[in-house]
Image (cartoon, rainbow, N blue to C red; front, side):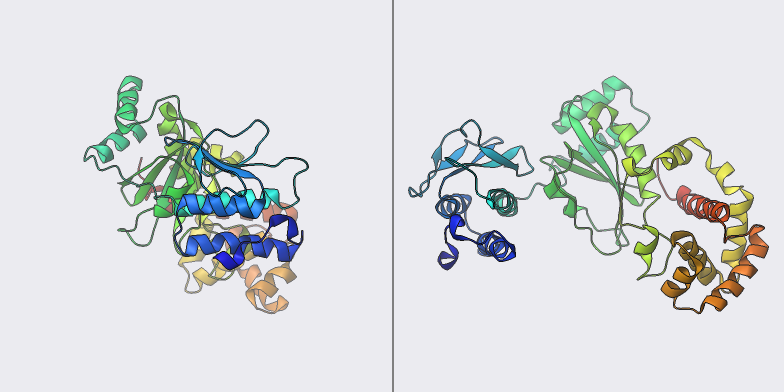
Length: 366
């Protein structure tokens, strides 16, 4: 690691300098260095004071050239970057800031986060799963929910973010969310794992292959039951219905946030599932899906709805344009409307979305 300790002021401001900063901090993470060692080396590298503050431990300061951390608060005007667990790193430079200061701070925060003990997803107390179910369920009154929250170690007024996580492995946890929040608790409800994190997330999770995640908007812990409903609604919109390799074409994602749904959130939450499933367009899609080539037909319709033209849809499906037109004509006879018009595409897209919602209705617990 010593060979990487240069001076920030000597680095190129472009890509090469950025690579050297990344390598500088990655070396500490790779060798599992102590936080004190990282701060000391960063102060030498940056040529100015740096520190770590917040959380439940005393704040640390290191001055350039001294190398030994000591307790102290950040000076006024220090540049900051959040670590993600009520802590932040800071940098205080005399004179004009350097162009690479912000990237250095961000990478320092990443290193501190990576080298800090990981928060547990489940509290050792055996009552936690039941308490969390009480907080998220519709059966508790406000007083009961507030008591359960305090027993879990969080005040009802504190902001929380709730996730609904579905995994192909029922035994899998949701550790990939743990580093985004200072306080994380999880419980399995049916075949969906409910995860509650204190405060809005810091950064975006790296989601394992095959896992789908719906995320609520941050809201007070007292409204966790509403947040859980929002997370489950978002979960219903994950995936696109396209074959592997084409999923991103239709905006399908392993993570869907409640705030990104717009009017579809209201449709999913307020229109009864039975009414959605009874739509003639959705019923026509079910009939098409039940045919011998049903999965291919539905993938074709998703591609058509997600692309700007039939030629583009044919290209991403690796079929000839005329072949696609012939297959669409057969599908249109079942659907009862033309697809290759703006109104037809809108109607098809809505029917595909509602079909996906109905497919998940019976799987999501309340």
